[in-house]
Amino acid sequence: MSEGISQPDRPQVREGDTPDLFSKFDDLIAMREGLLASGQEDPFNLVMEKVLSPTRAICNGRDTILLGTYNYMGMTFDPDVVAAGKQALADFGSGTTGSRVLNGTYQGHRECEDALREFYAMDHAMVFSTGYLANLGIISTIAGKGDYIVLDIDSHASIWDGCAMGKAEVVPFKHNDVEAMEKRLRRIPEGAGKLVVLEGVYSMLGDIAPLKEMVAIAKKHGAMVLVDEAHSMGFIGENGRGVVEQAGVIDDVDFIIGTFSKSVGTVGGFCVSNHPKFEIMRLVCRPYVFTASLPPSVVATAATSIRKLMHGGNKRAHLWENSRRLHGGLKDLGFQLGTDDPQSAIVAVIMPDLARGAAMWEALLKEGLYVNLARPPATPANMTLLRCSLCAEHSAEEVETILGMFERAGKAVGII
Image (tube, rainbow, N blue to C red):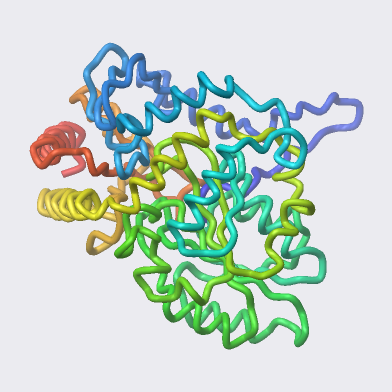
């Protein structure tokens, strides 16, 4: 399942021994040490000494093209966004030092929620300190003991953690399998509370959910629906509202979760909803009530970015061009990809195993290209992936350069 929710088996402890609470990580420690023993650069500890733009940084002293940052719409260096953050920092200081329900709601937090309501054309918006906390908070609060959550087996770790925190009965189904989802819903006892949790774009392979069919089935069985649009907000749909908009079901879902750390280009999370009782969540949702609110500079950058994304049609079109070209080019070179056709801004390249995946990652880095190395158990079906996240600021020339880097590295490592 996605994003690594499984826990390793615990070793046997003999009577009289002092338990080593780190022993359960021994296999992972050995894997990491094995990768580094040959002089391999640590793929999970890369340092960017200087970020030059949304698409370039100095990594290990090398000018590097960034193809693994989730900066889909390239908003991190937008002049208006940066200026808004600087002004809020000067006007309101560096932080709120408080929760949203105490002293942590500034004018900027309200303005950010206003921007979200306008962006999605919804009645309610609630900003969290991270996208992880948004899923953790909303899911654990609305689905508790005695309720049922039906979710895709490849759901993000934050979704699984929200289920665990709320103590609802969790009923997973095979990834993107509409029939399997309906079978699970049929088995839930009559009268029980039901929540179906889906993602618009799944972050590992970059594939999209068949939301039109899934939402219709969920509603037929009386379930509420939550869709995580972290990897599609800003990019997919006519107005950038995500797969729910593209599939025509945005008015049928009960909750949309998203994050500011992808297309918005800063940090934070949110939930939007049209449910008439939604505002009570501000008083009962623990990950909202019991954590510090986002700094004023962060919500200022988020609000400015969200409002600009409302008019991001040209950027969306160019990002689709980049996605189609990279996907098609890698396929032509002989790489195995996570999807048959480009479905999002994520292009996943499947590696034969972890050792060759790590070698390919390092070869690309030496070429001057950064991608994500994703490994089990965070990946579906125990695959090793090189995950490429395109940006609307990548030029057509940069995409061609990237393809050349993949070709040289792939031949050098023996992948193609």
